[in-house]
Length: 509
Image (cartoon, rainbow, N blue to C red; front, side, top):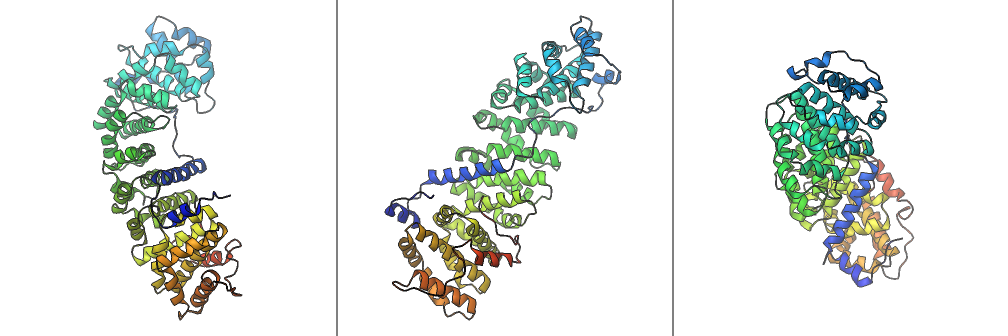
């Protein structure tokens, strides 16, 4: 059941005065949370290396065929002969690189991890370093307990030191292992950060490296941005943002996807954190990426922009200036429902801003129609509380102003939305206050004038609203069909809609 405010409090809200910004923020974050529960992020937290990397002089011995059982591996790893150590470590890596059911648990329980960590420090044997790093990468791709075993054996610091290795494959494998460790959660993420990994990663990303290597670096950086209990420290974010801006200009799909996910994590928070992302000037590129046909790019770029428009009015305005209102209406007809939902969420947050933002949302007539359909879709499936929140967002006055346009179909939809809002207020015993508000913004005069409209359906709809809600002491026998029973009349209209959005009514997330 909706929470009932004191009459003066609800009237104050209806008149758009003294908006509680913290409450607005909580409401927006609640919707954001629901979106995240409904749609898991399409990005792996951890990745297992099951394919060979590009050849390198340091790893020529990788082609050597070694097949050992677990006991032979244990014996070889603990041997003093470097060649035996290499053969056993390579055999362990191959076992751990099986595509299905790798024996991660057996290797951990065999006590091999401490020796593998020691091998990371064998600078005279880069092939051994490589094999050990690869094996540890795959162990860290497992459960949190298996990742914990890698961390507690002291792997992070030697892996960070391998980021300076002259051998590219060794260096890349260390990046991968650190990405898996950081992806396990905020505690290990922060351990990787405090071990000074970020400057090394940024130096590597700035150099000329193969695209596969750059993809791994970008993914690892995204895991260093991930999680918000707590968020990564401000120093780390400040270090990474310039590189993320550069990576956002890349043309590779995987690089772009992981970069957008990183920015979505960093913008999913308070206004200060959103500001750090906005101030980097990323919004024009993000809006451009929202038009991508590749879902792995569209999803995180839309998520990031959606996060940004939950911020301050200034941050939302920067998004509007970058052209977000030209793209979001198009995404409302996307074939994937999760994209429709996130686009509607972003639009609703723009509508929750000041009058100027709503006016920009209304915009040119093509966008006006799209905005009306969006509001109608919200209204059709919304709860009473959601309808009242729609009023709080300041949507009434722009809707009323559109009652003078020349499109009868749109006028009917607007009248129907207004009728539903009035009915919601009536159920909350706030109809009088709502009628006062409608009168203040000129709505009553415009609806009365529409009773003389040349379109019979417009005239009848306007007449029904006046008689039902604005004629004191009178009862009307002509009321719009089923407006208070599942909104069938509005549903029928939206099903007939042939405009740029989907023909099915959508509800708020």
